[in-house]
Image 1 (cartoon, rainbow, N blue to C red):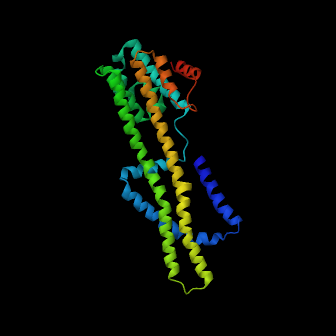
Image 2 (cartoon, rainbow, N blue to C red; image 1 turned 45 degrees about the vertical axis):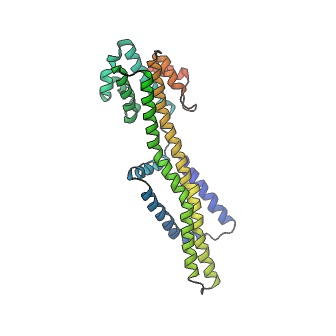
Image 3 (cartoon, rainbow, N blue to C red; image 1 turned 90 degrees about the horizontal axis):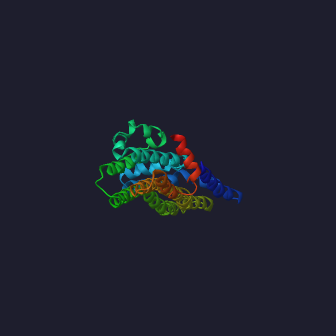
Length: 286
């Protein structure tokens, strides 16, 4: 929602002030389709050359996510930590082997079914169950598991950051594509030097629209999208860090209630539940 508001506000300010200052919007509108086709066509072609199809699809999906609110809310994190508490509490009371069935078949586990928001995210479920499985096997110590977690989180971060880098490169190239469109417009104008000054002035103005559009699309559209997508990537990584911290605290011998407190502390302040909120949620899920 805020992405749409921001885009509209930018465009209204740019074009509204131009019109209010006496600018001839007709010149801009006349050149807009052709300049836009040139700039975005060249940019799209370069984007396809520079990125594998996987990154292209992720980028398109990421742009769509920019128009949606964040899914990493306080309620989601309370569900996540409550799930971790239930699993660790069962393992503490009944032994690690008691959670083996929950780990092997999370889609059938009563523990996971209590938390549908988390269960629906297969990346989170896979991350949790993989390391719980290692804890059950007992073949790795806390330091070895921490090293594996760090490697997986880093890999996930790099993979999720690929669309951000792709959009950032695209934003950086758009002003240059605007210049290309402007140069072509100037070439077209130079081929019509015999026309009246009023006609030549309109043609030069149309050519300059290309430079204007390249810069506007770069800094008012694609650069903000890349920045917003980067923030979403950081939010996703924070969730994995929360799980990692909770599991490692449990492996070091802390009680489940203390282990989830470790996990709670790594969350961003705006979505971090208070101790009382989390405690009430956990007790309410028992």
